[in-house]
Length: 100
Image (cartoon, rainbow, N blue to C red; front, side):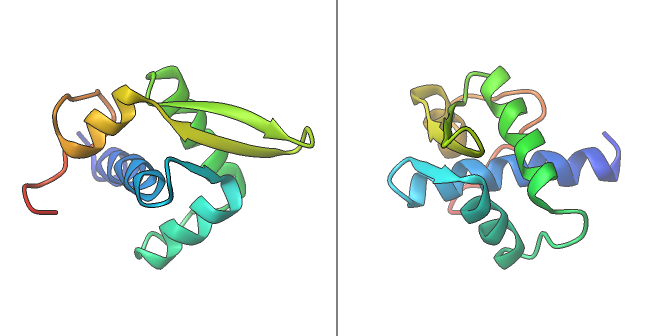
């Protein structure tokens, strides 16, 4: 796995962890802010977050709804919760380390 792929996989895990911290739901703006606060600043913008949300939806980790037909809102699924805790693995998402 290249460095870029590893960073992307880590960001996907971070999105799942952010959703777990926020009652299981979050919109693209909140997730973008969350990623940047975790140090994922380079290359993270709204379009990037949307792309990662769509990847996680395809992987069965989140469902996505549109608010007012413009803002993407992700809801974590049972599968996504298990991935965020390291109980199952998904290609393209970093496995969490024990103890965070």
